[in-house]
Each structure stands twice: as structure tokens, then as C-alpha cells.
Length: 505
Image (tube, rainbow, N blue to C red; front, top):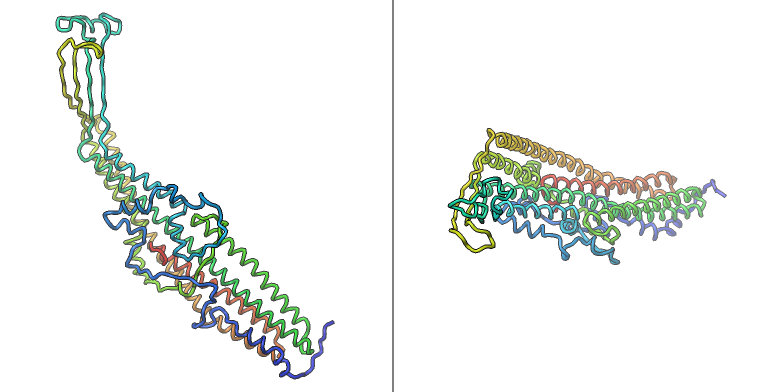
């Protein structure tokens, strides 16, 4: 039975009955009520203070002469000791707590795609000494011990003579042939192979940064989901307080029972939203585990502080300059262009002849008979001359020149695309920063003030239940929007740093 009639009664007695619970509940800190508010302790992370002066951790290997040992150390072959954990063990029972830097380290070590690129790089490096090695020698044994006047002697070819009483088919010779390329060809070909291998290394660094950007997006999205869960829990507590106030007023015939029911429905809706956010958080954690090479069912606890992770970002000009000098994708294209130019030089060397040196011994005896004649030695030098009007060589040079032109155009295109990506990422970062500041400094504090005023008025026998419920809904929505906006800001910050070729911490 609903009671629609209302009468005046003692406000003081009502306030005394609900004051202890109401005051304790009003004291709940909303997310980012002002510039001085702090994030709840359940979401707390560490962030590094890296400057643009230092190149990316992987890309630094290409800046020194000893890049191969560093690359070999980082991109070591997959063995039993460093096999990605996803292949060697199942999900553990205890949770693992990680921040963003630790997740990037796990990504670098255990991601299967990066492991494949490591092996491809080492495979390419292994071809360099093969190309630089001398050609294999050729050893020949000739025994023409055919019977005299046999059909295989080709007529009179084996006819005995005064010089060769047994016929020339009884001769035996052993020869050793060693081919040589024109000086400079092999060393240049090996240099081209080494340059292409280093370009593959730089390309793998670019892939590492792209995967890291994806990992950062998932990480900050999961932190936003954690904050949304915190907001929804606080919303449930606030609506519990509204329910108690509505129940107390209904008991004193000062409010309709429908107000209590509406507060209960709003509280149930907030609890239902928690289930959806928890499912989204679990999906994000599974994706993070898979990306860093862990089993998707492994327990993972993210340690993160959104406010502390918001570090100062360099200016657009500084980021552009850094990208043009240190971005791994540009390093890869520059190395590919260098290899293409060396390829033109190597193609022009195809006009030069190659050599072959043959040393042989000759004696008129069979290999299994006693020496019945004098042994002779001979030395032969052969030239492998490019003939047929240099057709193959001419088109080989043209092909190399076309490859060089394509590499030059690709290098220019990569440079333009990277600078454009930095500009676009910087614009997205500025927009996300403005939106997060507006929500944190103005909208959330205003919504919090409106909710507190509405609650106070309603507790003092005011009539604004719908206004109170609306204010509470607006506060919840704005707190969730602020959590998402701060997550978007950090995602944009990570994408911006990766676009410039730098790790985001």
C-alpha cells in the first residue's frame, strides 16, 4: 500500500537517526573531484623518467660499431633456457603483479612473433660468412685405360705409336681446380648481405614498438576498467545511503515508497554494470597475457597509477627530430637503400671476368699400375668472360638501378609517413589531454557538488528525490568518463612516443 499523503514532522529527529551513516557515506571520495584529489589506493603504478636524449633500448644497438654482439646477446637463439614460457608450462596457481615496464620486458623476451624475428635475423647473419668464404675447390681424376683399338677408343685415337706404345688411352691425370671471383666481388656481396641483415634487425625493432603500443593500449584500458569497478562500488554505497534516507522518510510518512524502490533499482543497475566491466577486464588481462607470451589463463594483477604515469611530453618539433634520427623503421629503410646502392656497384662488377686456376699431374700409366713413364705437371689459368654482348650484365645493372630507385622512393615515403604519424598522434594526445583536464577540473567536481547538495536537501525533508537520483547518475557517469578519458590520454601518450620510435616510459 502506497501512502501519498505527507505531513510536517521533526526534521531534527530524522537527521539524528541517519546522521552517523549519512556523514560517513558522504565522506566517500569521488574519483578526481578536484585537482588535489588522489586516486584510490587499489590502482597504483610506477613510471620511469626516460628522456628523449637516449634512443630506444633495442635501437641503440645500431648506433655503435659493436652492434652485432649486442644484437646477438638480445636476439639469442631460442634454446631450452629461453624458450617462451607459453610453450613450457601451464597456468600457475598464484597471481603475478606487473607494471607496464615489466610487461614490456616480458613482451621483448617471450612474444612468439619477436622470437621468430630474432631467429630470422640470426639466420640472415649466418649467410654473411658463407658468402664471404672462398669457393669450393674441384678435384678431378682422369683414367683413360681403354684397351687398344677398343670401340670406346674412337677409331684410331688409341692406336699405339712410337711415343705411346700402349696407346694414349693409358694416360692418367689428377687435377685440382680453384675458381676465384674478380677481387672485390665476394666482399661486396657479403657486405650487402650484412646490411640486409641489419635492416631486418631494425625492422624487428619497429615491430617490437608496434606490439608495445598495442600492449600499452591494453594495459591502460585494463586500468580504466579497474577504476570503473571502483566507481561502481562507490555508486552502490551512495545508492545504499539514498535507500536508507528514502526508507527513513517513508517510515515517517514524508516520502512515497516508490522513491525507495527507484533507489533500489538504480543500485541493482550499478551492480549489474559491475559484472559487465569485470568481464571486460578479464578479456583485457587474457589479451595481455597472450601478447607477452604467457598462458592466457595465468593470473595477472596490474600495478598502475594513472596520475603518476602522466608525464610531460616533449614538443612536436622535438618528437619529429627524434623520429627522423632514431626511428627503427627509418633505420631499416636507410639500410635497405644502402644495400640497394651497393647492389648497383656489384652489378657493374659483373662486367669483370672471373678466374679459375687448375693444377694437374699427368703420367702415361693407369692409376693401379706401376709407373711406366715420366710424370708431367701443368698449370692452367682460365678466364670466365661475360660474352653474348653483355646481355645478362646490362639487364642486371638495370635491375639493380631500379631497385635503388625503389629503395630511395620507399625511404622518402617512410620518412613522410612517420612524420605524419607523429603529427597525428600528437594531435590526438592534445585532444585527449584537454578532455581529461576538463572532466577532472570542472565536470566531476560540479557533479559531486550537485549530488551532495541534492542529498542534503532530500535528507532535510526536501522534495527533490528525482533530482538527487539524476545527480547521482550524472556523477557516476562522469567519474566513469573521467577514468576512460585518463586511460585514453595515457594510450595516446604511449602511441605518440612509439610513433616517434621511443618506448613510452
